[in-house]
Length: 284
Ligand SMILES: Nc1ncnc2c1ncn2[C@@H]1O[C@H](COP(=O)(O)OP(=O)(O)OP(=O)(O)O)[C@@H](O)[C@H]1O
Ligand SMILES: [Mg+2]
Figure: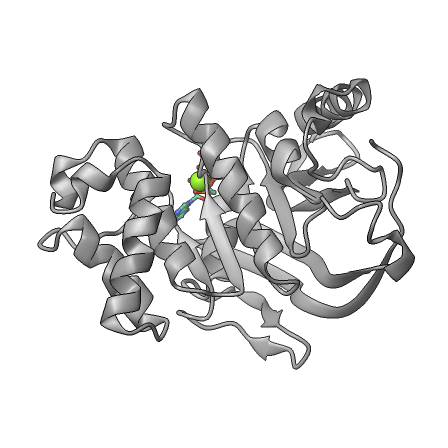
């Protein structure tokens, strides 16, 4: 089940170049560099790995306060970095607000509109007719077991329910890039499973789909990701942390044969891997 799969990496989908961020004189991020390349599977491998998804999921890990949300905002074009840039696609277009779908830590819904209407706005913005938008929105509500909330208002939902709606909203937008900040927080086990499944499904829809999932939970990140990015800080020669976080480590789960596939999280190799990452995580 966990044989390494042969991949070739092609053109860049997203590049983070020398990103730095200083807020109110405080260095938050320093020299952040990373790249997501389109992945092409070798054709003769397709039958063997047809359960492996097409697009990519990046699990973005770091302890609380390290700067995940700040980098997330930069990746989404919501915050301008102090130095460096984020480029999208083969053409390397500098990211701007609206080019990337975002499920933020605080989910934004229109309070004065019903849940169904909130979802329909997302779908019509992506180009659907009203009829199609309604059908797609209702399908999403069914998926998340929220059909009975179609005519409710955001204030009438629990935190976890709002979160599921926010995720559904972004999926309906049909964006190739989707950033999710702590999508699993506040969800019970069943809903965590559903969100994982959905992340996989979006990734499978299109080879160019790229989903970045921000979390501080190593097991959750590893269970959905093809690649992990770990944030941390450098240390000086006395062992003291230098201000400004960066991506210190990346792990390629595809190369290790651990990228998402049914049952993978129950294997010995997967458990050994998450233990290794957790140890590293604590040392960064
Ligand atoms: N406007 C601001 N001015 C100065 N510092 C800020 C500002 N906003 C956030 N910070 C600091 O930036 C650092 C990174 O914050 P960020 O929200 O990105 O952390 P995080 O990794 O997402 O944490 P968590 O896992 O708790 O969500 C923190 O030390 C925070 O205090
Ligand atoms: Mg955060």
